[in-house]
Image (cartoon, rainbow, N blue to C red; front, top):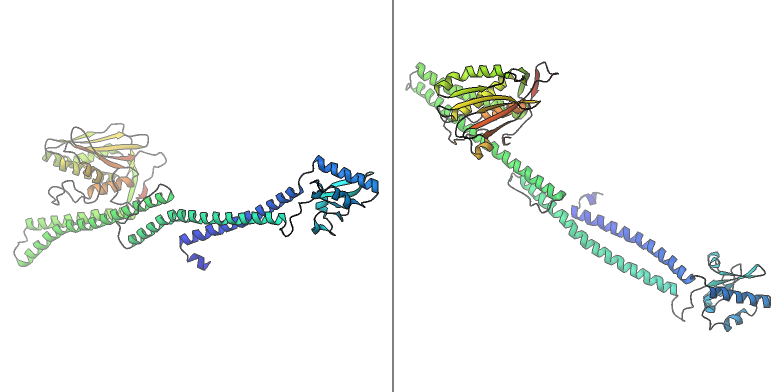
Length: 474
């Protein structure tokens, strides 16, 4: 077994197939040989016809006239020209041979099986002899017919067995190669993946189990490559986002140390703003890290969305008025309560409002709409009258550090983490969040929250499952 376990998969399949072929040939040969022997015995024993019965009646008359089997040799010789006479052996009821045209049977005793295939000869209702059919006597020096026949059958069986085994091995080798070649390609690709070459793929040649395995492997490799690229991009983005405020803090501190800058309230306030910027970025990263680890907790309790939106409107009214942007609330009075973490949902709405405000021109409108989606969910939407989103923006809107303007200046955009955090929070609530363009212009961000469930009246603590930023939005 130890030696067998060290063999290649292809060799194991060939050996297994060979053992099956050999076993099948041995069993088939045994059964066929027995069948042929029985058929040959039946052939040489042949069936009894009316002529055979007539010949046995003539022998019975001879016995009745003579009173014994004396002179039966002359009786047979007189009828040797009759082909039936040369095809029988006359034997006593005990099996002792009385007359035989086959010299091999002289002085022998027939078996009960052979006697059973004969014709009883009766005189006065008493069996005085048995006429047993035999194979014709072969020419002098010629082998017995049964041996010739069986030898020919055995030769044919061995020839057929060798041809079938050879053809079977050729077919098996072709089929096994069809199985092992994709496995070898998969093994080679796996080795490349383990060495960090995540761009490696295997060809998908068919749609069977091996083809589906190759497709799954390619999908896995693509996800690994995408996750690795996302990780690298994230590290680069974090370094980029932190470099600017840290450089400003460093330069200002060096200015204070060198006496170039005066510690005036304005300079200290500017330095404080940069510290707050770094702190906010680190806080956002911490939330996403907790989400990836499945440790971001939410306190789900009954929440009145209408009251929540009124508080948000009071918070952002001044800023929107300053930017000449109108905020419209479309919330029905009979909107059911939801099971949600009020502070987390407020954070999501503020993130979406901040994003909408950034792309809504002066004189535009931002609409917050809430409506019952079905018996289980309530849908909230934040829509603007901005330029809308491109197809690429729709596909990557919730990716970390993704910004539609492609610029890295904070004047035109945030850190690119707000929508990713919003997605993590909504998914933690069991809902979904997505973006779409609306006509004639503008974009809408929608998310769903679960409605009130009667058996949940106490606040509940839940944790979100790990997710990956490379995942596309719904």
